[in-house]
Image (spheres, rainbow, N blue to C red):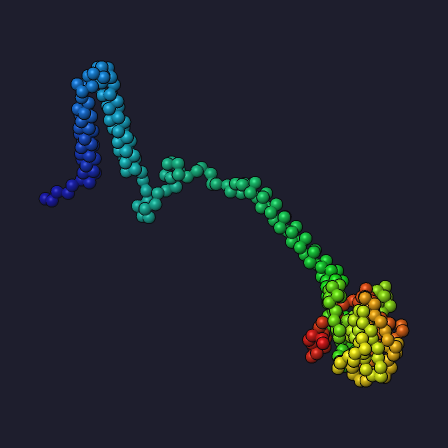
Length: 298
């Protein structure tokens, strides 16, 4: 008949053997601690009461260790007595709750940090305010600042600038150069011949600059008594107008003409005369329509 050992009895015997071994080890440590204390070597400095206090302290340390070991065995017994799911090896929620691993109620995170929620709302409101200010400034710049001080769209009205500019062509005019006296000869400008209070504007080419002497003799233009070499005129000049006599330009005046010289009302006409800087609206830089003639204007 084959003997089958009882696993429970074996486990109890193993635990009893471990306890006996550790108890014997603790007694050996206590004996070693008491043997290390040589009362004779301290006879000059310690009396009998001091020696017994040292021995009591050693015994107290040993008792503390025994108590800790007892708690360890108690924990092992409790673990062995706990039930668990043998199928999946997971401890039940009720057992975790008994051990304090689960709270009675689920953690509520909705009001975990009210201050953080308020700070997030303030940050969102501040960001929205900054965006509104930015777009307001952008709209103001597009509607008012750019058209009045930087760039403006202009439409050619008439044939006085043919063949350079044609009727109904759309242009972009920059409005910065003339503020810094950066206009040059042959630049095409937009100006108000009858003052800015009047809506009428002309598009012409600069021929004479401030401080110069302008005169037209025959079909030739002279600047400071020197022949002006230019190729912008569509045809030879037939009528010099008031430029038949020398015209002296002031420090803030320009002499302008249309490229279609015989069909242009410009500085040769008494009604237009010299163009003052304050009446200049800007310099033509770009043709944007028609698309087949898109490009910079010379």
